[in-house]
Length: 257
Image (cartoon, rainbow, N blue to C red; front, side, top):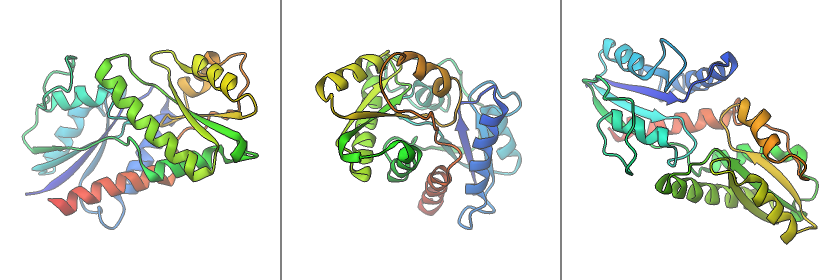
């Protein structure tokens, strides 16, 4: 039996996005407890030659018989996480059929979980917004994430966001926490409601996105146009917390085999 690890993230047309993901995966793979195990960084779409099937083929060519598939996505509410699972032969979690087909794979597949709520990620988010915070006891942190309109996936997104926002609130000593999704379009309504309910508290908007790009630079500011909030658009990469998360998940699977 030979183990191998396939990390899957979304993919982007921006070379910097891909580079940051690859560097985080490479750092985790080079850790002493993972070193020597074949690890491949693949992408759901866009990055031609580095797609999921390419990763499967590359690892099996190295003799991998036990394959740990690690989705580098932010939430188990992501429909992408479910459709990738379906393509590996897992049952769907809702009545939403993926369009990836079925992957060609001979190895025994072990499907991991995405990030969801995680202590390291809360610390990462706090470090991102530290420059924006003046008096935490008079501030509200509002996490904004991609989200989903689909009922089951929406509920999963909401559950994970609520937990992570509350963890961030406690860690930073903030007065309150809140969440909003871009899908459905909740951000402006939720921010207005916060300001009406707590007019004396400043709101720090915290984007929950893996890397800077269209959503952090354009979508969130446009959705909140004209409203009063603090925001620096800082995404999660590059940061050692992502590398630690990857290493922990890889190591836990290798130890449990």
